[in-house]
Image 1 (cartoon, helix red, strand yellow):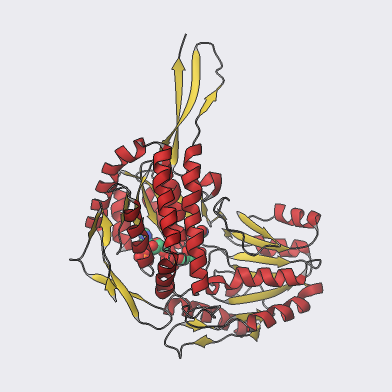
Image 2 (spheres, helix red, strand yellow):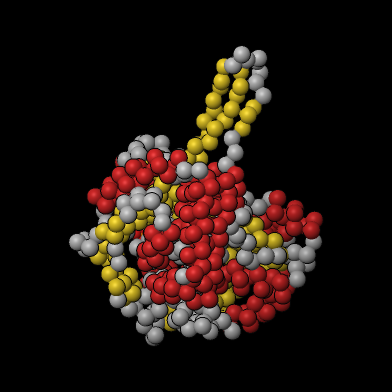
Length: 476
Ligand code: NAP
């Protein structure tokens, strides 16, 4: 077990502080510790990032890109070490962790390129003797607060565009999975980023966030996590009108229409629902199947789910790792038990598994669900697929939209016209059409309604870290 440190202004610090233990949810063993930083450490990081901003923002886009390219290459060279630590600290199967390292690195690569395409504008003037221009500038010091479920990718999806745009960054990872962030920080150091350009603070989220919110040198908060915490940050950011990007919770519907290719729908539902033990923001959380194909879908789907193997993610053959912690397990259990008490039937699974010392839940399919059940109203964050029978396409759309969330939705139909008509009516920022895995670095990722504000990835991703400065030039 190792005691890790924070990184502020080019130095590894925090050895004198109390520590928090990072627990492997597969066996309850301590993986390592990180310092419990608070306001003082956040303030030092703000000072460092503010100081570094001047020189970093004045580099050319090509110079900043070279640092990011080095970081990208180092991430791939160290893929296995990053993947192992990720699986140890938050449980995802090792093949998924390797995939996440590639995915995380792809954001660094994409924004290393995209930084070279931050164009201003020249706008035709309405009178003679004027030149109207729009210049682009980095917003300034950025604080990135991230969740545990994608310990690397959620950071790089923020760091990549922020650094490419000319901002400096303070990373605040989740206390459940901060060691991956420490490893990423080591790679930033190896890539040679100047001191203070990237900083890492671990510890008390509320104390760190307080310091970030109260210091007007922090101009942007980029957050991924629960809608509940997102709302706290919206309120706290009001006093200084700080810019916010929020990637929040989801409650994704997956719709299977009666002309769907059922094998494609089953494969898509497995990919969407059971990745990361159902702990992704875009996981299908509720499945609506048209009555004509309901029985066929349920049978084929549950047969595949039964074959998913559960265990310690370090085992190469495991498909489903543990949940993140006891609270996660209790939430999943509560959702299933409440549905069953109201008349849902367990087709497969439906049990917690705690005899291995970790917090596991069996891959589960439940049928006969209805909209009154909590599982159809809230994000479950576990390997459970509730399947509801619907009669019409209109009914499926109405159920899908009947939620405050609007992150991802999935539609399975072989008809192009039908697919387009359904998707036009879905209030979701991301739609997978005959596709259960829509994420990629080059596309805009983000939600409507209470699932967030702003987009990450794609062309839009870098806009979140830029200001437009309109300049009106008087000229003969
Ligand atoms: P969370 O509890 O909201 O925590 C997210 C981050 O916020 C962590 O770093 C946490 O730090 C910090 N935090 C907690 N309370 C805070 C406060 N009062 N002020 C400032 N920061 C605070 O979410 P989570 O359980 O880690 O992640 C799961 C959630 O993230 C799900 O709802 C999921 O849908 C969402 N998510 C969304 C996306 C997306 O792209 N839309 C992607 C992934 C996950 P500590 O751990 O130190 O408390």
